[in-house]
Image (cartoon, rainbow, N blue to C red):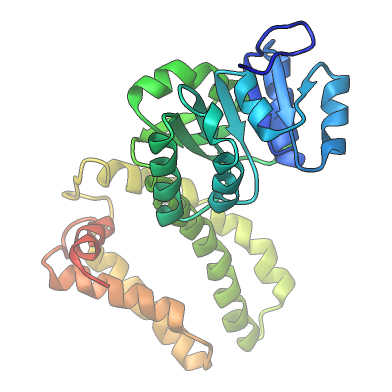
Length: 298
């Protein structure tokens, strides 16, 4: 028998996991006008949401039973599996939108568990802080079938108006996170490696730090270069050829070497550009290196 709220009706959506992010997700659904059931291992975390109109379930099973769709936002996929395994009898016919974190193998295990339990699923990465949830420019990147995306996109876009559907395999999100995180960390580690080289040359760290935003002005043109070449694998006639980048990278590496600065990062850049040229892409876009790297085995 389904769990019913205080009015004797099922709710529109349930949220399991009421940390800062889970609570923000629940509030976004309340703000969108949906009736919401909530559950957390620490029951006291539900109190603020109940004050805002949510219904508190006493168990995870009750929360899942209360609504056709349940959002899970806990520590990890394995923790989600642990919660759902204890609620297996109420999973058939339900949809679980999993917004916890985990690797590709863990995601595949969770999707297989849900399918075996008779439930449908969508998994997502939240590209926002809790205070941004519900904004038009907040983005959740989600995977699941096209049918699930069509059915659940209003729920997902209530949490992030810029949310996108990126694929249909559970393990895709781990690769997407790794790729996007590497982009951000590339910038961070570029600053970390650049600073000691400047310090060794006698340049103040304040001067280096102040000039970083000037260099950041090139990020949009770099992205435009990437977007114009990579999606369609269109590497011909670029505004700057691979050999041009390679020559500049060689100069940078030489400066690091002359200064006696750690040079693993610029040396990697040179190595990758040389791989591309050796593969015959010297007159094409630097981004053609992607084709070389995608064919390699680690």
